[in-house]
Image 1 (tube, helix red, strand yellow):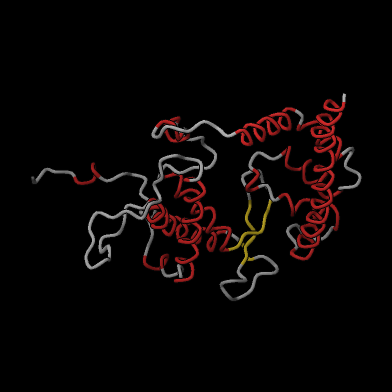
Image 2 (cartoon, one colour):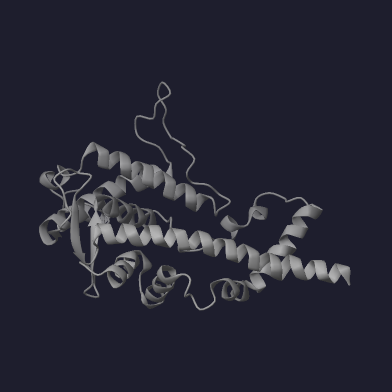
Length: 273
């Protein structure tokens, strides 16, 4: 046993392996709670796409109705990893990123200027770091929204026999199939050349050129292009966001009208003939 190397049994990519007590001191109880809520929501969303659920609250040892050694619930594993990943990113941000102009002294108002790999800049907050940490922690535990589930997880029939669909469900499926086949035409009919939706048009243009939508800073780029000022200006971003919401409500109504005219209108005309 004297020659046993315990390091061979320890994964080399353990999150937080190089964290210090000073680094962990920056993680507050509120950070823990926020990360836990995000992890539960993220894992629940992934579970909704799979037949076999891992977010089940199961435990191996229970004493007096309490799990003293933790649970097998995947969201708890994601939370633990996310806390360590968040502590790492927060340490790096505090050491390398300059505070944003609108940054405050409280935890809720802290913000930093983050430089992306492509050289662009974006404003990040503790909430941004929370979301990045949960996403990466979930991927470490096999939970990713951008990766389709295995066939046995995606197909309920792999575990249980499914009944025959009712007639109304078959009708809905037929309509949904028809809409999906003409989605591009429906969008073109509602959106046209985009002159009625300048914010959405610019956002789509930026999005088509982005390599990573999550870090592209689409609203910040559109806000700067339309209102000028500094990149990531909170006031300009809020104005742009509110304008985009207004345009989206109008576009949604036009999409509904175009869909009804194309799908249901053609069905009614065929029935009349």
